[in-house]
Image (cartoon, rainbow, N blue to C red; front, side, top):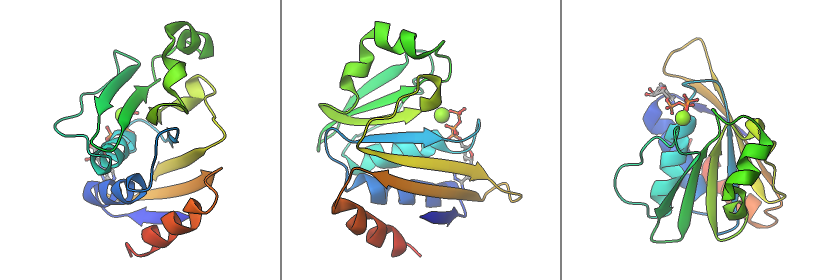
Length: 155
Ligand SMILES: Nc1ncnc2c1ncn2[C@@H]1O[C@H](COP(=O)(O)OP(=O)(O)OP(=O)(O)O)[C@@H](O)[C@H]1O
Ligand SMILES: [Mg+2]
């Protein structure tokens, strides 16, 4: 499904709508250039899972954990990662697809791709406030229909 986001608030709303349906073991892979809006999307998902307060940039820590009211939320930013080995040696990959919802920016840096996942591809457009947001769901079975229905209603 492809949506057009007209603002940061729009992207946040799209993400929060997806976030309402996420459960522990789910992974959201966030693709897109620098400044595309991956962190905005991660914050929207986290908010829907009951994470309170500010979310720091995890850029210097690989992963920042949060305690949401719904479940644990792990925010990964793999931009500076040297490769897949670094993630595995860190031991942090054990959280992906297991005890919480993982939101992962730059997943291609470590070839992260669990079976059950939402792939989000955010692309800039000619309009500086507009983004093309592509959402593909894998391994989510019946939930996928409900998620796409809720996203369609955003208009
Ligand atoms: N429609 C939009 N959706 C999301 N962000 C937007 C939009 N229009 C403008 N922006 C701006 O784009 C920026 C997105 O920043 P963000 O940190 O989320 O990007 P990112 O993809 O996480 O980048 P990085 O790869 O550096 O982590 C913000 O400054 C935000 O205000
Ligand atoms: Mg970011």
